[in-house]
Image (tube, rainbow, N blue to C red):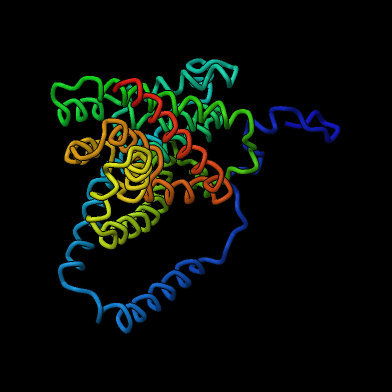
Length: 343
């Protein structure tokens, strides 16, 4: 905010700038034309140089992983986009001022606790966080919600309990570590984050006599098309990594404590499994320690390829290059700490 004479106040670093979400208009069809051209070139190059060396089994594995990621994520992405559009169209800003404390530092843990009541994965949390920011919620609180919602909601915790029968410490450890990471990330962003690092695509608004229902429809259509493209990019990257990385490498590192934690944390990023399903993957890796598998469960919903792609699409590259390393380091460190207490 400005005090009217050109000076900046502390709020300038807490809230997005006045032109947040506005980008210079581009001629209609320009991006689509460039995207189509790049895709056509990639397909031609792949057909000439890549296809002859690809085995049918590897191609089948890539296709299966790509489809699985998209099928897992798409329902939750639609849910998140619909919820975000509903927040924008129907929920007045005054509601959030009543629900969340006025002080951003106090709003961060409250926003983290709110994540426990929203069933959904990380694909849903990104557009919802964008909708909260658009309604005046402090970015630190919205980002805390973004991290907490896919990790500590009831569906995820129940799935974790089912995947680890007779081991309630895994459920408690996942809940505690994930909530702590979300709150620490929110407080860190509150201290060092700047509003100018946040950008988002312009969301269409209904004009003239169009009512809130029309605003909801337009916002949902725009965000779904925009986020869906980045979801496909993330799914492609995840499928490629899952196909290329040899399984033997994983087994060899499982016996090294520090390396195993870092390996499963990295695999959580690369595999991009939705938070409702990742507990079953972690349970299928008994050769790894409890701490390593906890790191897999905590890192995945906070940092993975499709989530990074969605964050870039919604909030911009300047945001992602700062926020992704922050959350990854916090997730690994907190997982190691909590995992050490459980064992």
